[in-house]
Amino acid sequence: MKPVTPDTEFSVSFENQRVVVSPWGGSLRRYFFIDESGQEIDIIWGYSGGSGKRGGQGDVLIPFPGRIGAGRYSFDGQRFQLECNDKEGPNAIHGFVRSLPWQVQDVHANKVTFEIRLDADTYAGRGYPFSLAISVMYHLDASGLTCAFTVKNVGQRAAPVGVGFHPYFTVGTSVIDEAEVQIPGAACVEFNEQLVPTGRVLSAIGTPWDYRRFRKIGHQRFNHCYLQLERDTQGMATASLRHRARDRAIDITMDPAFSAVVVYTGDAIADAPRAALAIEPMTCASDAFNHPDWGLKRLVPGETFSGSYRIQLRVM
Image (cartoon, rainbow, N blue to C red; front, side):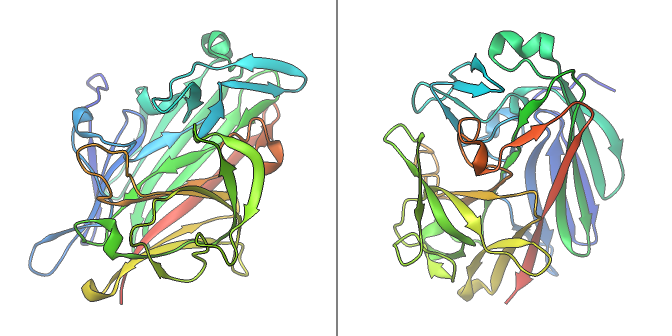
């Protein structure tokens, strides 16, 4: 196989569904349907080629999603300093793997699996002296697109682990303001001006940020991390985006591994602000390395952490 570059892509399909993914970052680059007239109907606001990415489209966020204030955290009584790589301020953001080449482990007509390994020796100098074996699978079937992850601690010490994904969704509107959204979170993490959590979790119930029932997005500027997710009897939490005039709705259903969801209207994307809505399944909240009770996974040697979320288009 040719060396993996930012332009390396694979296409998988099932019936009228198509997905484009890349082993560069293990990323989800496009998800669309082909309708009866042959028209492509985008579900994911996507891109092609490494230079086409905007605003973290389709990124995999491991071993931490979101921001860690000043890149500093403590774990098992030891302090660590991460590289501060956040353009919004002096913080660490979104882990390491989204700009690395992954190995292509398995390819089929309707699914593909990527793998990568983080070694303690490589990342100790960057503030993460832990070893992880990571895989992400994208699978199309009659129920839609499933994204599943597995993280195994292959090192000699316990490791802090968080997993997140950064898809943007579209229901065919020119700007996301025209759509309605339903978010299952009853609480939000409070952020400071540098978009770093203050440590407080605030109730969203009865506030302008309560979207547990469908509401129009309008001019709301989302960059919010929701917690206390409402779940069904199987423990699944579902966020949804819809546009009634286009008879189109998208459900993003997260299994119990996911305890948080970030919602972002993309206002800071210079060439395409508010073109789509990021609904980001996360196993922990932003800055959970400093707030372990916000869903941080303490993964002991030999232990495996796994989960999945599903994207499904509904015709209303």
